[in-house]
Length: 343
Image 1 (tube, rainbow, N blue to C red):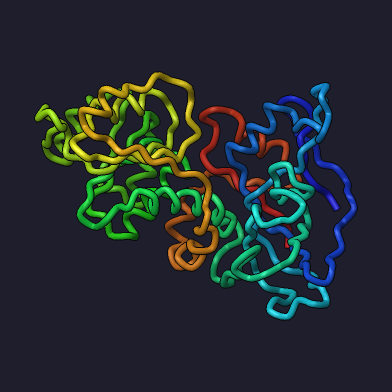
Image 2 (image 1 turned 45 degrees about the vertical axis):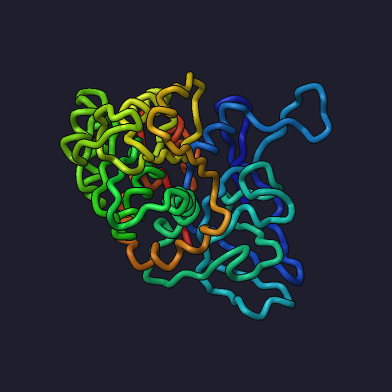
């Protein structure tokens, strides 16, 4: 079968590898779609991963792809709850041979993917045939978004701003609105992203490159105060899906008393204004991965699949995988790239 892996700094290659055979507890999935995300791009920049136990800096290729969706084509002799033809999404972190597409033995950007110790609700989940495979491939990143929302504790009466209108930020906005959150603002510096935010249900958008963030948030969420009585925007929860130091600065400058900041983006280095946090008693919450959310999201992703489909900017056939990764690694060229496979 063919599989995509890193090929030196900045490169990918499609190689022929042996098609895995399922053991008694495994299933073999014919991959039909697989998303590309920032983690894949990081591996591209690295050119691979250090070989285990090697101290000389030697890099080995990484099989790529941790956002696969596909169809079961073979089941092991001990597997009874799953069958060929089931359409499934995969938990990349459940593989016993290492995280799928992130340094493990297998990558989801392959014609076939072995799911070890296949168990519905743990290593994979079945989704209905009403959901296109390309949308089902959003399951993993939407679990990341859902965890951020869960960590925020946002409720119906909260006023929330999401910084960063990439796939994770837009996913956060969708989950917030599906949860019934009163008012959700999405901030970004790219006009097309802000248009997409409104299309998926944000109540308002903010161009943080051209607008006064404080004035706009005060206009939208009313005026409140910090612990010292200084005027602040009435925003209850800030969610950082951008990772830029300017976002943290904007939050501290606007945070009212007992506001919360949830960090879901990979953070770039910058100074932290601890004094500003103190003046607002700002709660800082980190959100990493999806401890429980990987299949929590699957039924709602299926129910609202047309809404989530709007997050996909490019669908590229597997035969052009190199072009798909070039799109993903070029700033501003694409939002969410999904590689599709023939059934």
